[in-house]
Structures are given as C-alpha cells and as structure tokens.
Amino acid sequence: MTTPIAPKRIIVAISGASGAVYGVRLLQVLRELGGVQTHLVASEAGWLNVQQELDLPRADVEALADHVYPVRDIGAALASGSFQCDGMVIAPCSMRTLAAVAHGLSDNLITRAADVMLKERRRLILMVRETPLNLAHLRNMTSVTEMGGIVFPPLPAFYQKPQTIAEMVDHTVSRVVDLLGLPQAQSQRWKGLAPP
Image (cartoon, rainbow, N blue to C red):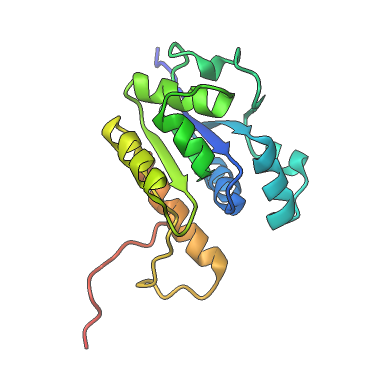
C-alpha cells in the first residue's frame, strides 16, 4: 500500500505595507503549482491595501487559500510549533511587522506564526517594503537574519527585460517559490550574458 504524499503547507501573510500584489500573486502561483496547501492570514491594514491597491474584494483573495485565519486568532493552529509547516512568507512585510518579528513580539497571528517558524528552525521569508531605510529597519533586518529568517525585499530585476509590472511581480514571486524549495516550470532563469 502506497502512502499518499502530504501536500506542502505554506503560510502566506499579508501585512500593511504597500505591495499586496505580492501576497495575492503568491497565493495564485501556489494554487497553480498543486501539491501545496496554503494558510492565509492578513492584518487589518493588509486587507485595506488589498482593496486600495488591487480593487479586489476580500472574499476573492480568501478564495485563493485553502485555510484563512483572523489576524487576532492567537489560538489558531498556526500559533503552535506542533503545526507542521514547510514555510511562511510575509508578503508584503511592513516595518512594524518586521520589528515585531525581530523582537519576538507575538502580538497577532502573523507575528506569532513567524515566531514559531523561527523557533522551530523553519523557512521564514519576509518581503520587506520600505524606502529609504532607517537604522532601526536595518537593525531589525539583521536581527531576523541572525535568527534564521530570510529578508527578501521585492526589488525588480531588469536583466530579463520585463515589459509589464505583472512580469516584474512574477519574477519576484518565482524567486520566493524557489526559496520555499517548491518545483516550478515557469521560472525564467538567468542563462548568462547574451552574445554581443
């Protein structure tokens, strides 16, 4: 008898920084990949940005995830290290959320789930969004990195010569999917300089 392969569990969190498109597109890509179970939690400000930046109803975004949790539900499964999870991405990650993660302030489900990822030595990716950066931001990024998290500002790459914002977003999301260790066929990979 063959044991079925369990789906990869990925937590996607959307906090209140600009760039809600990254979290939404990540949910779409993970659904398209198959074999991935997504767990979504968004802050109140995150939902505001989804509406403001993307004109998407909350229900449409929630429908992209397998499970959705209220940000104040500290008793949710995600809040425990016993919840088996393969990775978490905060997309986008506000400076407030970064600071809470850097200092272990588990004051909502996003920051508690991130704290769990760090203490259990699991993959945590923070798509931090702010510019310019002050010293507190930089120190918080250093702290998260020293604890094992990955700070991944969603900066566009131009070597693929993107023609649209969607192409830039997809390239960045593809890099995040790589960091999660998930196979993907669509990724445009660098093949070296074109001949002159």
